[in-house]
Length: 485
Image 1 (cartoon, rainbow, N blue to C red):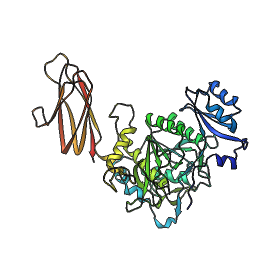
Image 2: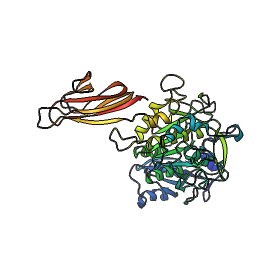
Image 3: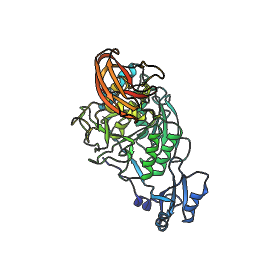
Image 4: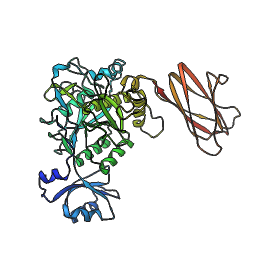
């Protein structure tokens, strides 16, 4: 078993890229002002220092370039330059292969309850999932119907075919996410999701940071909804953090492997707050001895002896956190397909998807979130099929003495009821009717937007009646979020 670490400048010295000299270094130059592709001003700074531009990035204010070693420190001193960092190589979380005869089916899909979701008619149809990896064998019988396109940033062309020497890494990941339910081979977690191949890793299972950033930018520009990243590095990158943060803010659920064989260290990009870090489990739900762990782990998923698609129309069995992450990616696609709604008004459901996956997870290890399992083993069935968050706005009628009531219909769950943006004097909450049992009476300070929360357990179907108190036109937003599914 071997584990590929991120390759830094030493790699560049031993294996210089085409057209680069031994004294040159691949870097990413971040600027304090907006960088436009047609704006020559930022490029000129690179050229003045003897550099060659590889790419002007579209989502972050940065340029990928090659610079003479002695010019890098000089460029760093430019007041318009925010940072200059190495364009290092991130490595796939390399799978370890075993005999496919050991397991004849993708046990993880059933183990997380994805089969129950598809049986209910929810299979991820129309959800756009980008696989940032070595590419996808888009001719595979289990993948060709779900493949919708992509881009090859390694070769800079429109053909993101998986590399023949990649151990089928990207194809294997794609099958876990969305292998077609066609009666043969294997089935993925979200078998009707749309797959997009974004090739950012080469056949050696490594990818340059600048290509990975460009791949995430592609996902933003092409309105992907979920992105899977089964690669990582111990080396921090500001540019990578910035583009991940921007992707999450744009509404993309980002999922990444925590890493293999690095106990106590979650690799980047999984370690970023904007990314769901996934550790790997065995069939008995214990943490994999090969799995990285740490406080950034958000969810755990099956990662041992996972049978999935391979290059050339075949199948193979691999294990690693590379296999765990796509189980969560598929589960996220199912939650989106089930109709999760934007409850906090930020024009994105990415945070709601993460919240539902976290709340629905099967708690393993220590109670609550821990460094091995995060919130627990991902449970696609509970996350996609349980009651969704419910939201309403209650407002005092204008010009009338009577109040205007609103309702929340809750079903078989414990809910956290959040009251936000309240300009009301008070909010009265009763069960069943305006004369029903009192649940809560909440007062707000006059002249401020108040907030409050309380918990309520609904046995069967229960209607909460919301009765506002205050001046005409005052209001409050009320959201019921399932806490126990």
